Length: 424
Image (cartoon, rainbow, N blue to C red; front, side):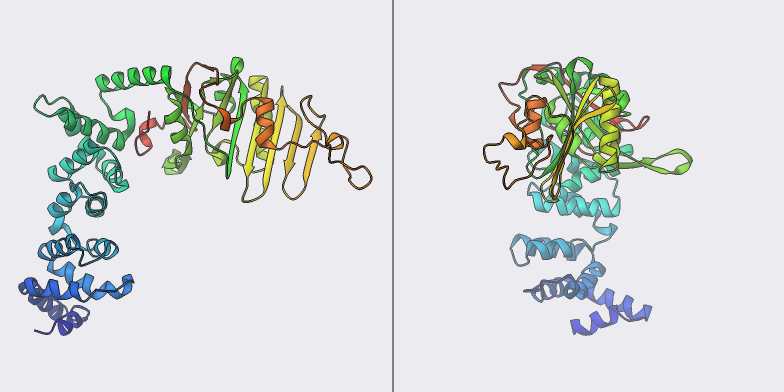
């Protein structure tokens, strides 16, 4: 039997030839599969794997086992195995579930990828999901995708497993993690949700806040701790919940999601994190495009609107790659001091007491240098420490009061709509 001719028949327009070639390949799988896999040595492009991938797909489960065995023997590379294992159909659903249960991160990820692609709803898939989350450590992102995809079907079974006295504590923990990966805290029953809320309250008491770094780029706002409640209305935030700083930062840095809207129109929703009170100030982090919008006019409008509700508001924006450095202070609906630098720095408003003016800088030479009377010398990274709180300096010595809040940028969505779990 010439494998090359059978591969050519698989590409023909003649259905009978294709069917006959597929049958011959399946009949000789024990010989054909090793030969095909031997032929991929050194192949580094997906296009060059296509003939082998088509043949393996037609052979089915025996080819799946052959690829997996070759991968374990390192006869194919991780990259090749990933491509080859991505071609099989529903005949290999149980094998994908078994692969998803593998303790090896890469192999487990390929197994879940197959389950997601085929949309497999099976007890084997459910067990693999629970086992994966029970192991903890690094979770393949496709495991979370699978938990989301089958959440409606898996939720009652996972809840039942949580209450099964015959299940080990490890399995019950895995079931809870899988529930949260699929639907967030909203997926839990009342008992588990109450336990989670108690754990968050305990964690809040002992945590040392760590805020996002502005090393490359970032934005945030600061409002007085005494009047911070106004920020929720000013920014249109909904469904706020107590949260640890670790979870709040992770959520605020996560991707936005698309959800159905009125008249079947989709809408984009994100999460905002309002920190505990830190040295008398609350900071706000979240999706810039949803909370601020326009890169320039949106900053001014947002900080002024928040200052109406909170008395004062500060806005900071940094983009090292683009060369942007901005800070603003607004009181009672009006910006009173503003610094913006891209190619050249610009100032508006009267200097604040803590600012060092350019004309007072020791290196300023009035004979050669020019400076406006209100020109300062401090960018956002330094100004935030004078004005309120420097996120990079928040730590054990920071005075912390209260707890953080996690809120949504749109009503009627629910925290469970966001994929994945949060570290608390």
